[in-house]
Every structure is written in structure tokens, then in C-alpha cells.
Amino acid sequence: MSENKGILIITTAADGKTAASAAELFGAASSAAPAGAVNAAVIGTGTAAAALETGTFGVSRAFAIETAERLPGTVINAVISAVSALKPYLIIMAEDDLGRDLAPMLASALQTAAVTDVVSLKNENGQTVITRPVYGGNALADYVIETEPQIITIRPKAFEPAAAGNGQTPEITELSLPADECSVCLVERFEVKQEGLRIEDAKIVIGGGRGLGGPEGFAQLKELADLVGGSVGASRPPCDQDWWPESAQIGITGKVIAPDLYIAIGISGSSQHLSGVAGAKTTVAINKDPEANIFNSATYGIVADWKKVLPALTVKVRELTGN
Amino acid sequence: MDIIVLVKQIPDPEIPPAGFKIDPVAKKVVPPANVAPVIDPYSEHALEAALKLKDVNPGSRIKAVSLGSGLNKDLIKKTLALGADELILVDDPQFTDMDCAGLAAALSLAVRKTGSFDIILTGRQASDWDNGQAGLLLAGELDLPVVSRVRKIELTGGKLRVEKVTTAGYDVIESPLPALVTVSSEIGKLRLPNIKNVLAAKKKEPLYWKAADIGAATGAAGRVKLLRLYQPARDSKCEAIPGDTPEEQGVNLALKLRELKLV
Image 1 (tube, rainbow over the protein chains, first blue to last red):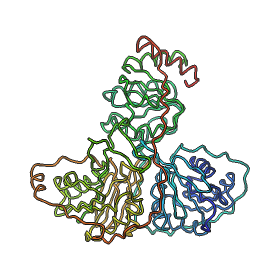
Image 2 (image 1 turned 90 degrees about the vertical axis):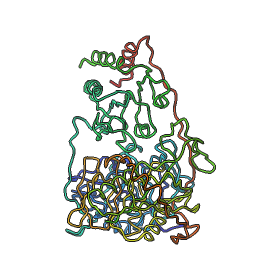
Image 3 (image 1 turned 135 degrees about the vertical axis):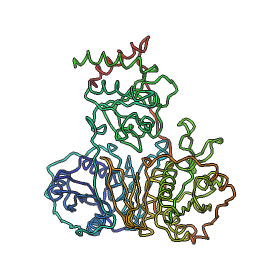
Image 4 (image 1 turned 180 degrees about the vertical axis):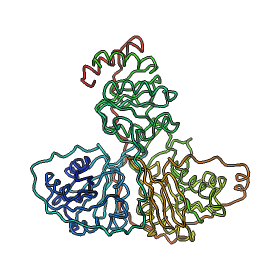
């Protein structure tokens, strides 16, 4: 039995505001095998204030790592210092731009192992069993990491967020980064502006697939989405063919979404796509192919030509919502 | 410049979900009898990145390296037909069912034996286990700077300048050489081979190495244990929206969504 105890949550902050995914990380921690305290390291800007906030999740010790860039190679030594101070048995971070690089780099530096894109954790006989989709979501694999600290990244929306409580005031340790010292350096950061609501934030997402036949169909999807305050996404083929922006590609290599309502139009339902929408509470599929795989995971289905269904649906929704 | 590109052979990820089977006891995927393995799509993007670098840096040499068990020579020779100068197949039953750390350790031995290099290119993840770790772990083994999920690569003033895909857009990042870069699909599809290269490739033979040739220890212990492999239970109770015509179904769907307070 190792002497490592407790869990370290690694999260990010911008301008003192903790990432929304942090509550999901603490939610995941509650599914793991309990062993000691849950503590945190916060990476980003305004981290001292954000680290203080983690007290609402019961954190008693928090590390603040201040950096505007959040590059894994730049923060890794500071993270290793936090790990050395806490000696956790499990490290949890988000499967995001930072986490998906930091987890394997940390595993390599600490001579341990990471499992990425985790969707479920179970406590089996005091052991944390880690589940992740493999083969594009066609299968699930349960793993145990046999070295410590065990490192995992969790898929967005896969875990219920932990509720913030009154908590406590954590002891904060600020860890500084070496100034102007980088091997892999950021030169410039570009943000591609997305029109309207981001698909990962929308409560209603209308998805278009190859079956739309061209970029024109997306205007009709947009009309319905605007009507219901939703957002339009696409499966991979329309993005590959520039019918719809790649930034709104839904799937395992695109955006993972968990809206209240997902309407899949002309989408056959590859495993990669279904894996990215598995968190949707209600899925409606409209496709003229009755054999389309999307019907296997849809709640409601219409086997018909979307060109006939969608205008009628839009008109009726307009009438019902009075928009 | 000397380029190493890592190429992985995987079961065809385009197998329709209905044809996808696993053996839960062996904890393995059972590929349908008539479906041949393929080069991983992300490896193809890495190869395209290598070819693009060679296009603008004449005199560059590309070594393609594939490590696995039961590699299909004719399949992976496609790298030669497309313009790789050498192909090394590191093929040994020992390389079955390795975890990411084991794979990275074996790859590092293969790369060291391959000789000097300026850049190692690999896919951002492989479409079988989707871990997205091998490249980053390999960089750790070789103590190399690493940038992941790259969509554009340039050499400027002896440095590497890349565009890394991020959730919000992209980062322009500089790195010294030698370095490891994992390539994302945005770099572009793998080009088609030309006849001259196809004919030249026919005359070339890959170099074959076994585990012992690269000094890989037998029976190296893994760090991650696969407990179970299973197919997710699909809730296939899809309720058909009634209606005599598609238009009527559209109207009924709107009513249903209203009833559920979803719109």
C-alpha cells in the first residue's frame, strides 16, 4: 500500500473566475475511492482569488499558479511542486486544452500513468476503476492505474457537478513560474469568433449531417435554432466539406455536448458522433434511412426526408412559441 | 531536414457499429473477417505533414516507422509510394496489448536506433484506443520539446513555428529543434501517390526489426491494467413520431417537444 493519500484537483481560472468545469472535477472526485482530503491547484490568472473559492468544495489546501498562457511545459514544474507537497493518490483534471497535454506530460515526469477522457469512476473494493470510451465510442474500457499518483482527465459534461457548500477557507500557496523561460513558447493566440451561442453552452442543439446535401440546408437549421434560442452544430462530413465551421463540429474529435435537446438532421450516427452527444437528455433523429445508426440512440425518430419535415416543424414551433 | 514519422496500423475504424464485435474474455476487438486493417487516419495526417515539410525543404529525408504486432507490409508500404525514403517495421508479438507508457518506451528505443532526426511527427491520437498520449509520452522518454494537435508546421530561422489547434481557435507556438509534433486532421488529407513513386516503392523493401533488435525488455510490466472491455448498452427504444405525411410528423414533433417543455 502506498503512502499517497487524497485527491488533487487541477483546474484553471481566468481573471479570478474558476473554470465552470471545476465543479465537475469535484463531482468526479466524489465517485473515486475515498482516501484523504481533496485539494486543488488552480492555473491561470487571478488564481489566488480562485483558489480561495475552492474552499466551497471542501478544499483545505490550494495552490495558485499564476500564468496568462497556461502552457503545459511552462506550468509542469509548479504542478510537480504541488504534487510533491500533497502526495495525492489521484490527480483529476479536465480533458481540455491544458489537461489533455498536461496529464501525459505529468505522468511521464512522475514515472506514473494517465488515463484520458474518462466518463465514469467507480469505487470497487477501495480501488478507483476508471471508464473511458474506446474505438470511437463503440466500446467502453475499465482500467485501473497501478502506479501512483494516478492521473486522469475527465470528459466535459460526463460528471455531475459537485454542489458548492459553505466549505472553509483554504490555506493558499502561491507557486511562481520562472520568468521569460520557455522552450516551447507561445508567440500569439488567436480566438476564432463563433457566431451566436457556442454549441457546448446551448440547451438546444440542432445538428446537420451529410444528409443535408450541401451548405444551403444549414440556413434552415439556423432558422429553427434561432427560434428556440439554440445553436447549430454539424457532424464531421459537413465540416470537412466546409458546409459548416469546424469550430461547431460535434463528436469525439470535435465538441462534446450535453444539451437538454439535440435534434440530429440527416446524420447517420457514426460512433464518433454519438460519443460526442451521449450526454444529451433528449435526442430526436430525422433521417430518411430507417437503418441509420442514429435511431439506436435517439429518444424520438422520424424516418422521412428532412426537407419536408423541417419546414413544418419550424412553422409549428413558431406558432407554439409565439416567436 | 531529417524527419521521422510514426505510422500506426489499426483495425478499420469505419466498421459500421453493427459489425463491431469484441471478445470480452480476451478483452480484444474482433475485426470482421473481410475487413482489412488500415493505416490510422491521424497517422496519415502526420505523413502528409512530413511530405509538406519535404516539399518546402528539398533534400529532406523521411523515415516512416511503424511498431506493432503482425504488421501488414503491403499496407504500410503506402508510405514509400507517397514519398517516404525509408520504412522500418518494428514487428514483434511482444508489442501486443501494451499500455501507453509501454508503447512510448518501445517507440523511444526504435527512434534511438533509427538515428539522428530534426523532427518526429505522429498523429494526435489513434482511432482505435483514442488515448492521445503516445506522442507526448514519447517526447518525455526522449526529453524533447513537444507540441500537440498541430495544423501547420514551418521552419523559420532554425526554429519550428507551428499552429496548434485549441478549443477557442489556435496558438502560434515556437519550439527549438529537435522536437516532437502531434498532428491534427486540420493539416489536410493525405495526398495521392504519383506513378513514379509507386513504381519506385515497389523496388524498396522495408527494414524489419524485432523487439530484441531495439533492446526492448521482454515482459515489461505495464502501469495501466485493462480490467474489462465491453460494448455500451444502447437504449434503442426510439419512439416514432406519428403522422401520415412527413409534414404531419414535423407538426407532431413540434407538439411533442412543446408537451415535454423542451421548446
